[in-house]
Image: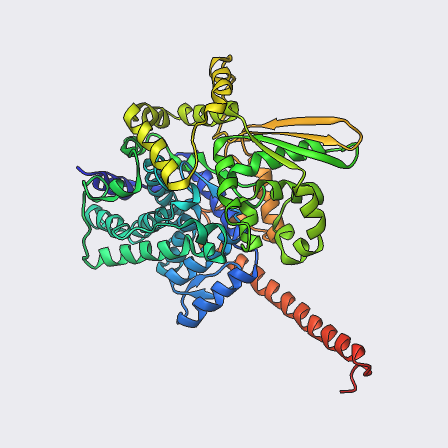
Length: 532
């Protein structure tokens, strides 16, 4: 039996009543988190909504930010663009599955009249499928948010589950979804607002794949493992082991929600900085952040496209700017990523960013690796990689990204980290950072944080989620936590009412702004307001 056939059997077998309680809870958390993320309006996301509105005939599926209703692929794509805009999403092992897992499932569930239990089961199916596909190519040319093909795969899994496809048609849906897989390009993702379509485009293909499979279209059962198939092109060292423990290890429970907008690898640095700045003794002289290799590389990739980049996109991949914004505002929310805030604080932001020093600490990278190793499947996956495959990975990474995974200058630091007494392993996926601030009065403070505050299972996770719902103006905690027993319509009706209310308020503000502009224009020309 091929990998896709085994996965299809698993997807078909999923039943809401049989899901572990922790899996159901994580699915509810992810749903609420993404509804909050998709509630924030931005000019770029509004442009996507306008563009899709021009080519959609309407439908039953809700767009969270605007209250529009479209056909399932359009609604899911627009919601994903809004949730992508601020990078205020979440991750699972291994990938940002959320944009497609939640919004493909929501759009199809509304369109097909499915129950909230069916919806949550589809969210789980999407995460289990897409997360494992992302993990299987983690040692490849793309990772993190760049593995956009997982959105086609996850959307196909969610759609197949909601359409109640049998094993053969579910396998076909999965295979069709990645028959022509997406390959994200760094300039488009790191420097331009085209990034907002990173999940939107592939998830539409995934939804279409499931509907096509229902009508009889077929895919290749061995598409992943074929010698000219998916793994051949998307991985330097494929890790099929991640599909071996279906129903035993649940990807869904590895959920980690972002506490601040931006790259997930920067989350702990923001938390550590917040701890250091609590009751700060004076102005900041310098911020030094030591972090793991993943964060270092994301910051390096972003740096290659700083000049001329869309600031609201590139800031998400700029660790220095992220920390400078946090230090200036005392927080980092979507409000600080608005053009108005960035313009008002441009000079201060530039000066403080120049005083932020970013360093790689092999000890912190080792914590990331040991965090992955703590997951049984992760341990098996790392053990399955041969020395030859590691050499190939290092060589191809250097050729493709002009970067080094290992540096001779860090041999001593790596040796000390490996020989040191092993530190207790925190629960959840660790992406640690250590932040040291030197203040103008000469004092220094340091804080180190291993695991993001929004990690499912951490005592801080609920508070992170409730705060994000409050920022979005979404009083939907009770309706969201009732998913699985309560109705899906109750939740979406509350969101639609909020969208209408927000749109009305925005319209009033816009009218007032126009009136003020006219008044100002009249006064500046010497005319009396209202006389012409």
